[in-house]
Image (cartoon, rainbow, N blue to C red; front, side):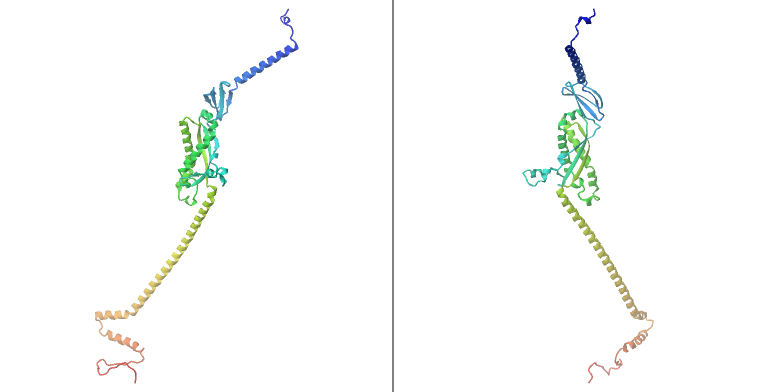
Length: 344
């Protein structure tokens, strides 16, 4: 007799219980396998994994296959890889919408929100966007819940520090007329992003030195500076006034140059007329006195003693011809005397 004949056949109820048992056993085995392999996963190329064992840091691993004990023995947290650049826009530098209200107890406290002071007591609005990488995965995972708030404070402090070390023209083009004249300010405007990135990194290094590292490093910072809305009209008015003043100065210089050229031309004409008149008068005087000069030269050299008498006879006739009446007296006869007087 076979062994199978020794056991009675199971009824329908027992068979159902038996199937249910095997079904539960298979499910338990599958669940155990799923739990045992729950921390076996593939780490993407742009991520890294932080493995903690009972809450303590165990190791970190880059891209690839990760094999770790299941929970609660080990926990795995995926964080961005060091090659991945993350972006954070700093909202604390923006203008608080409630600051535009003119009434209320908090209006004075909010009046300065969104503004930063420059080194020459100017006021600007700055918007900044931080780009960073994860340098320490465990520190990043540890500070992840507080990372955004910490970045807001760090970047805001770095912006205040950097702008306080610069003049207004070293942050943005406040006076266009000085752009070509002061190249040093243009260079400092180009260096603003780099100086701000270095200031943020110094704050991060200080936290790391105090054993409170955020586990990140600065990749770059995008900064955009602008005038406050209430000051734009004033700056535009100043620029318009300066442009009008420069136009008036240029116009005045043009008029002055024309006046100077006209005066120079008049002066040259007067000098030329005076020189011509003087030359003409000198020539006339020389012509009129040429005979006397020649006579004087001849008398000085005693060449012709009778020259004076001949010159007198030549000239006296023309002189006497102009007189209405001529009375002659003998110079050697003293008996006659002619006196002027009225006729009887």
